[in-house]
Image (cartoon, one colour):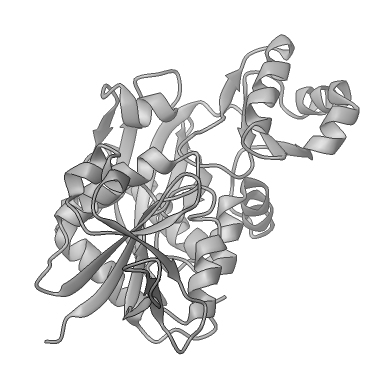
Length: 359
């Protein structure tokens, strides 16, 4: 079988640059190079594109850009269907045609529809959700609005943009207090990996939490605190998506923040999650329904809270979840009998299926 020319994107101009490096180095270690001609495309934090021709350990250690790299760019010209690479500054660029791209990018400029739009214009199949779905799932206000209108239960919430907040912060605090009180969560509408999120226990803590969130986005969401277990479901596929078994997060911190996810190494996960068959089935069905409502393709991790009274609340969808060795998405499918390397093959196969109306 002829090998697939696979472009593998990592890094990115994002606050989640380091998470991307961890995910990329893990995924690349499981990529079957008998099936793929691999082209590693690194994006620096300041937005430079480089064709990286070294090993994965340098990606993990964030020293890759000091290694064997050539300037490159993804051409939007569909006749190119790939990368333009400058072997020397004074020569015309070399064209490398790509059959598929795996954008292992997290956060802004990665899973928010921006890179998906560029790949769509270029006419290159890519792993994951399309432009509209990626953007809608990234924006928590849009996600809440769409799922709430479809009758999917979630936390109560209010939101505000930076201009209106700065004009009258006290009025917004009054609105949040009236809606659900304390404790509550303050979140940037567009950020992942729990970046910029604060758990707030009193009105006095709101200004600092808002300031932190505003460092990451100009639109802020405040959600009620839900007491319950944190449950995650991985979904895979296009027209007929498949839901995995469920996993449970036992965070080392007060909530599953960036430090608990990636740094301190003390958080625990349970898979399959020890919950009733009835709750398991409700969560899996809701995950697939939300996936379809949001127009997802390829993959997404759908996160829930399971209340003490047994009620299920959808928290969010992550269209490019972490792919580290401890990340829940690959773990859940591994538990379902789909090894990491075969999961990557499935995702690339989903991307290369004939797609109608991808936007």
